[in-house]
Image (tube, rainbow, N blue to C red; front, side, top):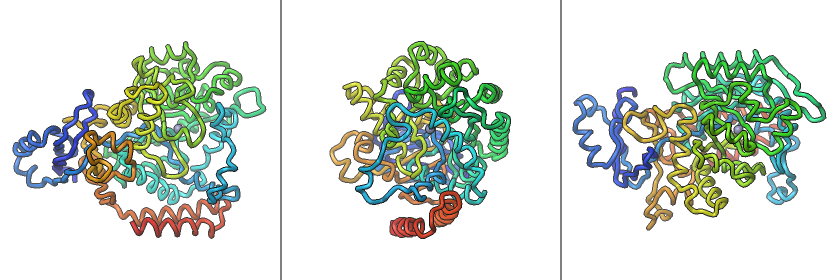
Length: 505
Ligand SMILES: [Zn+2]
């Protein structure tokens, strides 16, 4: 695979470079996984003609006619939580009857958020990965990452997963995508009814896990896996852990990601339990700098906003997720876009969901439509800006911008192809707009990472998808039964239907 030459020829190319350059009749040429030419098909054909005999002999051509060619999507803030999501089939399971959603009650993210309760829930999730057998963890991680890959995500940024990092690394290697892997990092709680932050474990234990991820990522050797220090929440991090994470990030010059100033309730809770507000706390711990990925950061006070600007932090948000939980980092303050207009980079992500729904295409659509609605301005976020937020800017968040994030000569060949020749695109001169409006994750046709075609025609090319699915179902039945008291019959009913449906496709 390494010596392959790949020509993606004759598509509508969106480069997502700094100038948002497009080539309506364009091609991309990659040698050994790296882009060597991108532009009008005629120009790229000339580059093909100039290749050495050996490179040309082994060349594979992907016909991109009738397709849009985009950079691979970079999901800079994600959590692997599929295993934990199985709890919804437990005794307090969500009822499938459509009328039952009328009885739903607001959750802990809604109405400003219940940060005390969330802090306790997040802390309890620390040990979930330990309850998984290695084989279960691996099967869940593979299926979870496969859903990302099929939806066009070629690079993920893990901000703490309810899975074993070793399983995420193994799955990333096997599936051939890229990722920055982390640990579920927290060592204390701001618990309801208590007056002070309470430690729940040794910071050293969390930091040791992170160090072992660093070593495993380095030993993996493909160059596609990195480690990313993160903290699950400002309300779950002791001074000792914060200091340790800052030292780790500084020592290895890595990005550091955390959810910060994400809920209106957070500042009061942090002042009460930890004596200071969220952004000031990061500053005190040495975590407020240009390598910080500040996730959902909508409620910093005015002085904190100035601190974020001065530190040139990176902002990330997950527009397609907020409605599912009732949180409002966009309409709540409009601070995210205001900070972006003042010069900070703002990227997109999916966050973590119990079900494999909503990819980067949905995040782009929601960013485009919701920001424009909020500002009463159809140019606040245009589709090509949404694309940059899901590719080049997100790559910058992960400090991977020199290798990925746009289609430019010298970068790795990570590409996503989407068909644009059906009814939705007829008489639509801007296919990206059509894709964001009427398309979605399920329309991704071809996914290429490092010049390797991993998905084509919506089908996985390099691993047996049915085997990944069967192993996931087996692990899901075991985990749901053991950890969430789900009777086998309930889950078998769901998985049988699932197997049937996916087999037909
Ligand atoms: Zn998150």
